[in-house]
Length: 396
Image (cartoon, rainbow, N blue to C red):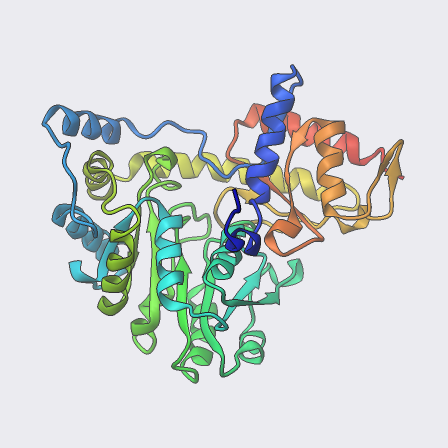
């Protein structure tokens, strides 16, 4: 069997690879604390689970329109107006099987072979793979810990060329937790205004997990709204990762194109999930706020613990549930047979010596860092940081 060449355009995500390794070690009886995957450790709130059960019992078992049921599209429009003061019609919304599906729909409908796509690093691993699948050219812009991993307007302008078609970013960011303020977004918008050929994908899946105040969307700026694609979904803010439902809000022309593409891949998302999502979006957000309070407590602990480790540089993430410390001070050091030449070596050292699973920063375009997910219990986080601290102290 000869497989298609397009499989060589991208690699398996390091997040999934590390999770596999940690599961294999757990199966051998090793006590691994897994901080590799970005998945809420909470149950889906009860009122959402109840809505899904009711949908099953009421006979919701048919195919749905490709773009989503009218009731869910209305609920998404209501949410966007209530939470973000964004006015969208139902014809500007498309529901997909997860936010990752929404992203790839947009990329495949916007990017032609040879088109340049600007991605500030660090970035979520899948962005580049999706662009590569579309045969686009990824153009990275490095953003370091000294700028809280956020892009400056002058960096953006310097990267744009006549071939630039798309810009992709997230706020709150995976993997750094950095959150763009309204003023920072406005400064980027001033650049985008000069280049009308550039579309913007704004990944806002971590919108609710925000520790610094209200979420700000780049879609709020009317000068560029007709070029913005807002991506969101149910997985992070409602602890619904396995339910698989994401959505985009975008210009009608793009939504129609994505509807056409999706009709040949998956058609509509699960009707049961769509019914549950209506309840989640329109009901009291109290359970979500409780989860966010727990994430903030964990963020505070992990950030403080990392900043106490000699050689580690750590910012204080404004959102999401990750820590992304700079560990480059350990490059060139060793312990026993472990020689640390890069972030991958350090991540593997922590897996085998500390029995803590992390993800190397190079997977996110920042090889001087590693990512730790704080979507875990305080008990496990305390133990993990204790193990990491002791293990790093061994390196000389």
